[in-house]
Image (cartoon, rainbow, N blue to C red; front, side):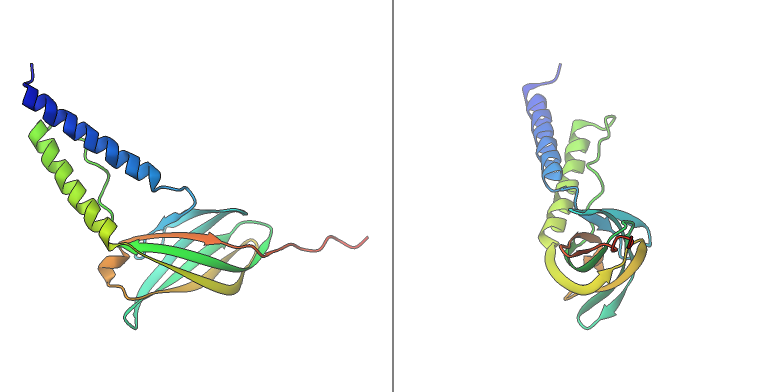
Length: 177
């Protein structure tokens, strides 16, 4: 049977895990896409008009920051004239909360403390920016956009989360009868 101190430590660990999980739920709006500046995989970007695909084709040093080459896939049958991108960026987020049930309570607590420190470092590094683009997101096509993040270091591109809004939709005219 665990001592009162061990039970209190276990309770404190569980309370901290619950708080961190709640923070993760509160900060995942489902409308932003997590992308990798150094990998070409794409993510789903949800907007009020539908879902787009987005990826980063690379990042290169630019002035005191970086120029990201974004590729935005518009699978819809509508074009969008002009759009805004909001970007949140910073150092890499820590991996998921470690859960090693075989580890002792002390090991779990130490692992949790390391994760909390890494999460705090990530949260403190976050910056936000917004940019407007006049170009058209062509229907059924990949569209290329350059996004400048400054000032940044390569380490601050470890976490990129973007969202997009557009409110000028363009549909083809119906066939003439």
